Image (cartoon, rainbow, N blue to C red; front, side, top):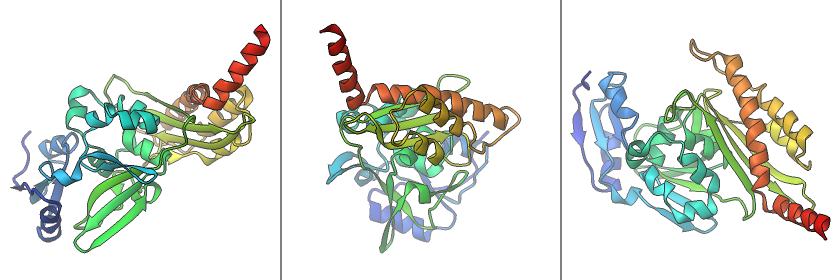
Length: 301
């Protein structure tokens, strides 16, 4: 297949890109192109004008700003994968990014492109939902910031208005010592996940869960938090019964079905993966590790 005809534009500044997006008829923004190019070639989309953001240097990079870690929307997934800052402060994202496609995919794919494409099975939207990321959206004369839960409107439908460009993604790291885990199941390595699970867990000094985030990708039309599962763990010592109950909550989330993957199968996977991910997050929690260390020393003294 060949892409339909379109006019190609390659702005070098954000202002130029914004002007093009606001004035051209039928515009479409090109980021990494890992999803858009196949869609063009299959003629699933037919923009009149294609605006390539790859030369807009101001849209790339990773930095700390106050309490946040901020990503330019055109930051490559490969840069995220090898960033010491991401590994140190956003370990959930560092783990999830390794599940994204293949090396060639990550070389070109961008965090902003993935979030705007908003495939519910994609790893970066799932992490953004898990971490309550904020997305900075700009149009000529206007800047607004949306929480991920508001940005993700529906299946592959972000809350972007005509003429707007996503410029930044802002993550507020969890405190040092928290636990995390990201697991997914796909037919083949590099495929989109049938189901993904992201877990964040913080324990207090007594070993009880003081903060919990459990998010499912691939199950519904957008990534979804599972508040029932989070509530089941909050205040608990995250024992086997607590984990089983939280995983069961994940298995009751209303799921999408299709001819290849029925809804009940996605629910079963959600429960199974949650039951595996929560203990991993628990084992990585500094408070849990310290409690285990104390217990071990007591047994051997």
